[in-house]
Amino acid sequence: MAEAKKTSSKSGGTRGTATRKRATKKASAPRDVAAATLDAALALAAKRSWADIALAEIAEKAGLKLSEIYPVFPTKGAILAAFSRRIDGLVLSEDLEGLDDSPARDRLFDVMMRRFDALEPYRDAVGNILADLWSDPVSALGGLPQLSRSMGWMLEAAAVPTEGWRGLLRVQGLVGIYLATLRIWLRDDSADKSKTMAQLDAYLRRIETLSERFGRGGDPQEAA
Image (cartoon, rainbow, N blue to C red; front, side, top):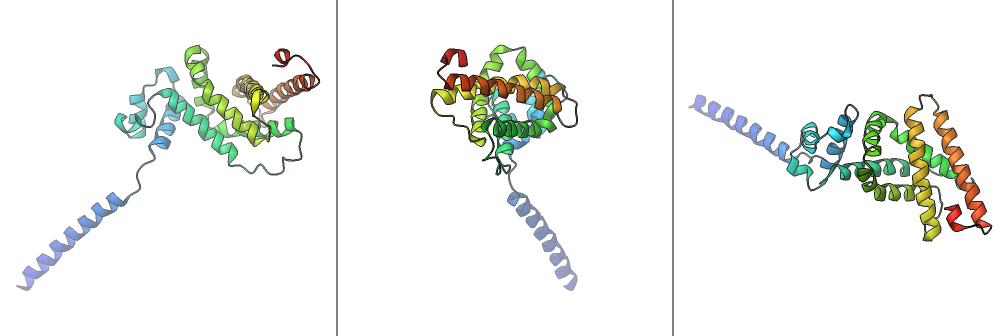
């Protein structure tokens, strides 16, 4: 009788342990599908051509099913847009205090260099992605709306107005500066990113000169 109770108690303990394990498994936090997918896509892009990477491969790398990715990222373009937003968030989360008293060009220079710093861990992936986009104008154009939004936020971070047609010109001008400077950044192997800084500064000075000229009554089309 005592042996039977002992066996029953042991069996009950085993069942209790199994129940607790199942409960723990159910209570575990759900995976962040967006973050896992983006991380997997960037890891693959760092080693291969972006054009050759299929969504199914990204899902496998992330340990997800295609059905889990689809509602979040229906296209690879949506993944790139999420990457741009991730970089936006990294820049905007930094302490931008102390820039208020600086000239607009200096504020924008600081913000944009912070963006390049945020991109640094993804340099190989960015290089492979851009190589494909620059050879595929259709795909590149598809990413322009998100890029414009990102550059708008960079201007806002630098306390540069983005409203109205003047703001639109500023956003589109910064898009061009950013894309041109990206080419330099990808080849910049200096420890302090001196080549990138020099090119960015030169572009911003050029835009500043045009803005001042337009502010004195120059031709809007010429300034644009």
